[in-house]
Image (tube, rainbow, N blue to C red):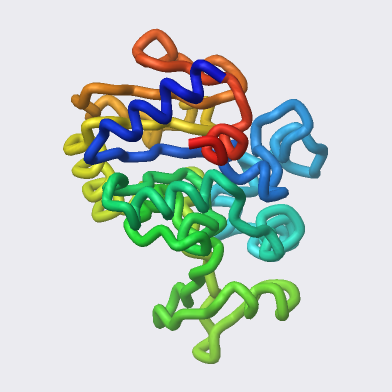
Length: 237
């Protein structure tokens, strides 16, 4: 593929790559895309998923939140795919300065990536809302109803829900990685989710690459567009 060869050349000539990814990075690991035609947001529930995954719903209907969360948000058997693995290798080779992800599955770290900015948090971390005690994700799966700490507090996933702000430190780190990169590769995201998608405006480097199966609003700014599965692309560079 000419486009893949172009990407390989860009990667070869780059010294400071940042990767910005979304749900499409994890679909090849068996995790559903939220907004695809058959994705999570198009399935039928008593409430829209956007409502269930909101701070207000978590506070007012915690048991219903967890029923949905355990069934639709936890995919702990998923394994890193070629995109996750190659990105980790690029970091080890000293070419990648960071991964900025909208995903909450922890697959980048599972593949070996160290510099990962999880804009929307992670299902792997859970804390008591009262005393702050940490709980692994297995605790959420092994309990029923509303999981509670020994102190009586409700346990909440370290996931940014609707109505909640992004973590300032994570955003700051992501902005610094993006602003200092000479190449930015965007993959598996519609770039429709804000404020996360707005962070790419901080990129001032030489090459902007977008790998996505559908068009994005930033396609006109890209030096290279690749409309293929991201895992397939990364397995060839």
